[in-house]
Length: 176
Image (tube, rainbow, N blue to C red; front, side, top):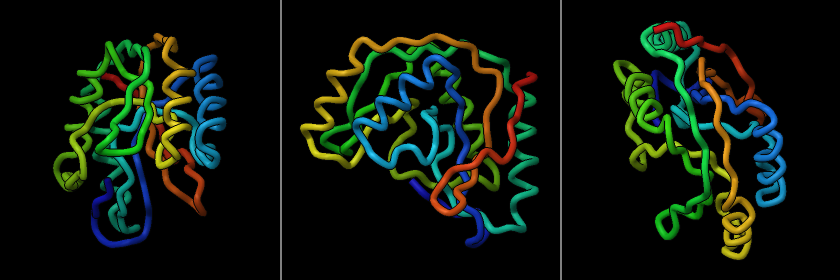
């Protein structure tokens, strides 16, 4: 799911962080099932990677700050696993409570000048493995079937891909 805002220059994404101890558990699982998943910690994607040119970055930051100012902190519950097979070779931890808030947030973020087209409809989740053999996807499904986490989300992060690694550029507190 990529789109364009302006021209090439920066690859950015927007995500919700996952706190410890849940982050460590999910990152460890991701490392077992998808080597190379360590380029960004486990997260709930709000805006999948898009390309923006350098001149658009201040507007992106302003847009995200405006959105965050309208959003209240919310409870997020991660529970169980799912897959997008056969459409996409992905295993994920499911978002339960808080999913509606994630969907609203995604719509707000992906509006105005950031209203990019997406390849698939938005579905909040935490990716555990993708584009790996079926046996690995099946093992990931079995391994995390009892996973559960509950925590409060009070911000979203703007990330940039630099040399193959995702780096947090700015965190936007929810103050709505």
